[in-house]
Image (cartoon, rainbow, N blue to C red; front, side, top):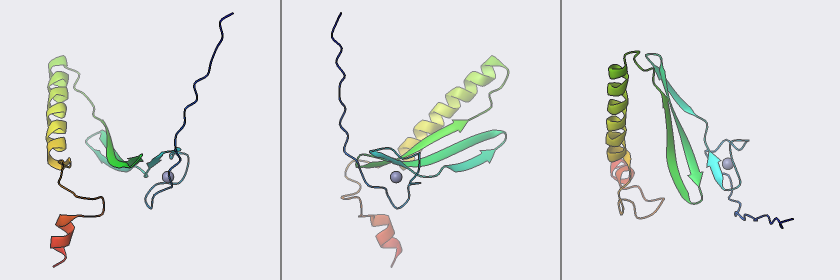
Length: 112
Ligand SMILES: [Zn+2]
């Protein structure tokens, strides 16, 4: 009989955030907000704020009804992917854009 070993995973627990749900959606080192939902034309987009370790990110899910015509469905999929790339290009933080988590230059200039 072969010996079985169990690998122990060690994750450091992180505290809840001001915005996380503080319920079953949070894990030991991942915290999740309530879902932000937008419905339109039979589809649904959901954004959830997530902190994993020391990084915050937006988790985006969408359910988009596809055309019954295969060519139409493929066009929708290709267009959705192109627009997701545009979304990332528009909202992603570029390296060096923010010097720290608390420093937000756009907000500082808006308060004048
Ligand atoms: Zn939490």
